[in-house]
Image: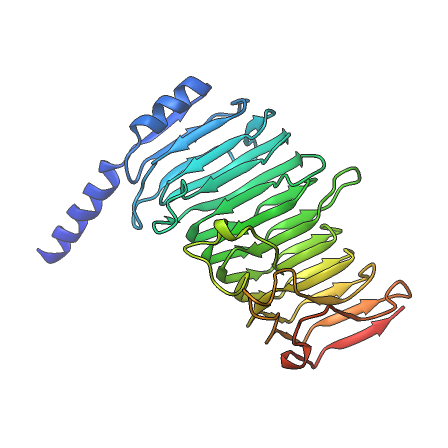
Length: 330
């Protein structure tokens, strides 16, 4: 009898959610407007245009709302200032889509300015974002005020500011993505963690000439944009583990951050420095950049690197643990 009840409950959960296939922008907008937790919106291969604005779309922790196309023939969102903007959405998955040729951000996801109630449970999976900007502070994926999120198996190619720009984000996983810089794009950073961002795992990613700083552990954020409130660091408890870096002026930069850990990465041929320790916020409001860990990394560099570590003023380099790294010159 107990097993029968379990089967009946499972059947109810499956049958109570819907999968709806759409092929036009209007059909997609109608499906989003009526979506409920557990629903899947299947995108047929098509160009769905630009500027899709999605507000207050809410799944649950156990029943995400999924919007996605085919893994082999993804849906396309192209052009305009931005392709997709998620505002105050929770437990939504975007997957198997391609975004390109935006003059602003590619995909933007935020908490709608309600800093005390972050968006939760967003997933970005198998998404290609390319040709964004091309120059200036324009990000491929801009996320602000997101908690408990995941970005996986995505490809970023050609952007203006950051491939992934985080402001006040927490408890996220960024894994198994590809970041490729392109000529003609300003590409300041690959992944930027700033504005009070904490507890992010960055692992198993590949970076190829992904900006001046492939990973920026910190940044320089306007005080009004910190989430959930102003703190005395830009980034804290960021874990950068088992990634592969080629190129960049500096693959790793610690910037007004603390307790950020970089371990077991492969670093090939940085253009100027192996890592940087910098202070880009005033120390009368923020702590000095401190207590970073850079250990057990495998590094190969050439004569372009005159100084391995670039140490800026008002930092605390002696508080860092830099050890057990392998250095090879070519």
